[in-house]
Amino acid sequence: MKLIAAVNNNWGIGKNNDLLYHIPSDMKFFRSKTKDNVIIIGRKTLESFPGGMPLKNRVNIVLTRDKSYKCADTVIVHSIEDIAEEIKKYSDKEIYLCGGEAIYGLLFPYCNEAYITKVQDGSNCDKYMVNLDLHPDWFKSEESDLYEEDGFKFFFCTYINKNVKEF
Image: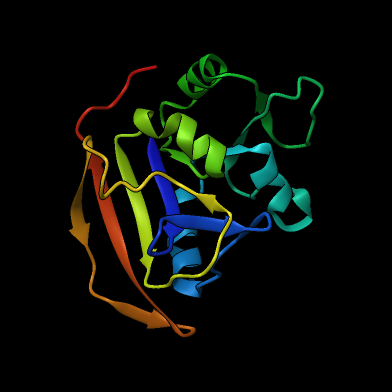
């Protein structure tokens, strides 16, 4: 499983149930990685998508504690064990962990790789993910040149988990 996120200088990922950034090249990168693959998201993340609907051209697996939750064109799961069973059905696809905060916090140890867009910005936020730069199991394997778009400077980084937890 792979993790994908855009973070600010403090590893913030969102505010008021929305992304901090809508940078076109980052969105394009996200689409290029996740299209025709599987994404794992939480209910709040799903509800933050346009119209509260799943992303097209992807299998949308939604983790929620709400046993009665339903949403068309999604696979609803309620535990890590459910996720482990569900993703076995998609051995021909890449699996991407796409947030939000609680989902990243719960599942990042199961990811072998992370694609992080690091935006050079200190915007206030109310949602964060684990700082992989400080985590002993993770190391940065690649960092792009510095890009600038829509007034933001950012890098595309790849991190590797040297101690992946198995389901």
